[in-house]
Length: 333
Image 1 (spheres, helix red, strand yellow):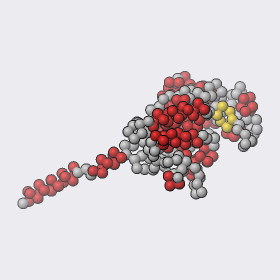
Image 2 (cartoon, rainbow, N blue to C red; image 1 turned 120 degrees about the vertical axis):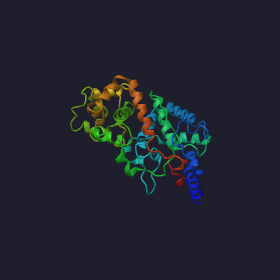
Image 3 (cartoon, rainbow, N blue to C red; image 1 turned 90 degrees about the vertical axis):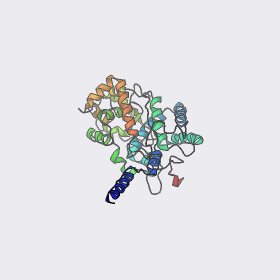
Image 4 (cartoon, helix red, strand yellow; image 1 turned 180 degrees about the vertical axis):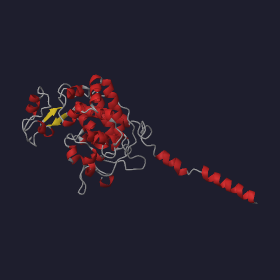
């Protein structure tokens, strides 16, 4: 009898240990996380539609590419890559895109244009977060940058994170230590940070961000050959808020994402304090010099860093939602 009891106990123990609830498989099936070509079955045309829309919009409005590139920094850099950046303000909540750190961000309506095109093909399937990331990928290509393989499967957040934006996004006047620390917290190392700041190769910097380097006295670290152009573009110590006054980040190839930025900042032609620090800080200067010499190395590190940024703490599976409209959570739609 005792032997029989021991045998039954052993059998029961084995059954418990080897038993795997059916829902465990279902959970894994429901949430594969981020994967390549997530929509291959649910919306096979999704990535092609986004690519086509980005191309059409870029032909009509060249500056959209800068906007898409900035979107991925400003959304994915703040806690989660979940399209919270795209949400409008409500009576209770300020939008991320209306904070000081988001100054100059624009063209959000074109994300809606892309969303509408995808919705016509596959209603309620493709998230705004994935559209934001994939439009940035195609915008990078439109600017002459590398084709970066990026995973999809993100879902959309339901709330703005305006209250924590300044804790996550570095400011252009912060120390290099602060900039490195902020990116390090999401897994991006020093060469990755140097490469990401290479996005300053394209687009423009508004005078309001520059005047402290020009007035009341000129920052002696600026290249004197570059000063007349900066003073011409930013003639007032207090820029007119109604005027769109700016300096192109790279006068040589302003519409091309290339390694000319690194040559410029080594020549003291960086517009922002962070550009100057990147070229002079002992931790970052070796990578700046290497990227100035090799566009291939810049593209390699830039691609790696963008992929890491795009995978920052996404919502997947049953988390979040698939918004009907990118600027509104579904409950407000």
